[in-house]
Image 1 (cartoon, rainbow, N blue to C red):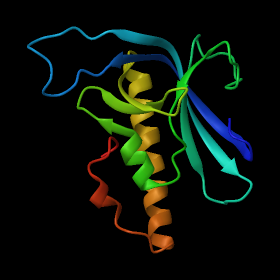
Image 2 (tube, rainbow, N blue to C red; image 1 turned 45 degrees about the vertical axis):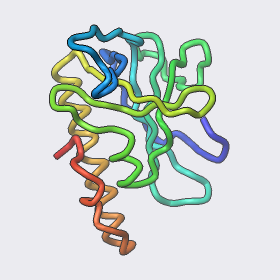
Image 3 (tube, one colour; image 1 turned 90 degrees about the vertical axis):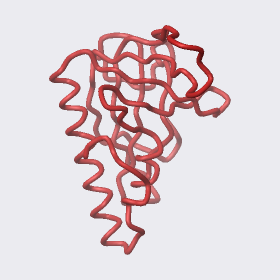
Length: 159
């Protein structure tokens, strides 16, 4: 986790999988997807020492999610950028209908799009509900701070 940030809360989703995303327009017919990860996804609410607004990050770790340490290097797989508002949220995760497309950071800070699947239907609904709540929170903050209309950033997964 970055310096100056504290994990205020996190919610675990233990049936998460990440798959490669086939490049649109470059694939020749049907090509199989490859499962790159199967394990625990945590949506972490972060608090900054310099900002009172909530930030979020999604962390993927090997295992069943019973452990609460999101900084365990042996279990760490990847994570998203820190989402500081509506624009970051909509850029980082989008619904593709049945699944989600999520941007994750590689070790060299390159962003890679992966397909997120949650096998358990109840966990998937809980994840959608959480994303909806986060979006509502950010939209309310945008309105209070006089920010721009978040609808200009496209359709969000919780809608």
